[in-house]
Image (cartoon, rainbow, N blue to C red; front, side):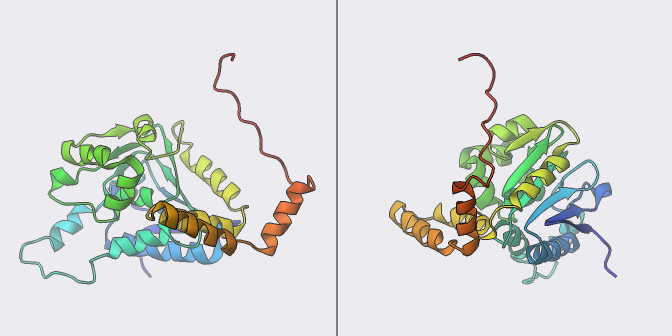
Length: 266
C-alpha cells in the first residue's frame, strides 16, 4: 500500500486534500505529485468543492530538491514521462470539474506557490509567506507558474521575486493578488472550509463556468470573449437554474447581505 503522502476526506460535499509531509515542509516529490493528482480526480468525481491544505506548519516549500538533485545529475538519463507531470496534475485542479480553495500557512514557496495558484480561491493566515527562489537554485518554475502566477501578480512582480529572492508576507501577498483572504494564525483551514461549503451550494454548472470558462475568456480578444460568454451563458441554462431564479423572484431565496462599512462616518 502506498504511503499516505496526501490525505483525503469527504466532508459532506467538500473534499479535504492534505499534503502530508510535515517533516519535509510538505515538499512535493514525484510520489506526492501523483497522490495529489489522484485525490484531485477523486474529488471531482464525488465532491462539489475541495480544500487543499498542508498538514503541519507549512502549506508547501515546493519542489523536493533532494529528489530533484538525483534526476538533474549531468549523467542522469532524461525521463520523458516526467515532462509535464506537474502541469497535468495542477491543470486537474485549475480546470477540473469543481472549484478548489487553498488554505495557506507558513511556507508557500516555489512549487508550493504554483500549487496554490492552481486553486481558485486562496486563504492565507498571517504566518504565510510567499517566494519563488528558482533563480537562486538554478532552475525554473515547472508547475504552470509562468502562466498562473504571472497572471495573478503580473510579470514585473513575479520577475522581482524570481530575480531578487524577495519574500512576501501574507499582507504583501494579498496586495500582490496571491491570496484573496488573510486571517489570523491557525484560521486559514476553517475559513477555507467555510468558503468551500458555501461554494458547494452554488449551481454546479455555474461553478464550472467560473472555473473553466472565465479563465479561457481572458485569453481571447474582446469580441471573441463576448461571443464565448454568450455560449457559456447558454450552456449553463438548466432546470436547476430556472428553479433558483424563480426562488429569488418569489422571495424564497435569501437576498445578498449588505457588507459592513469599512469604518468611519460618510
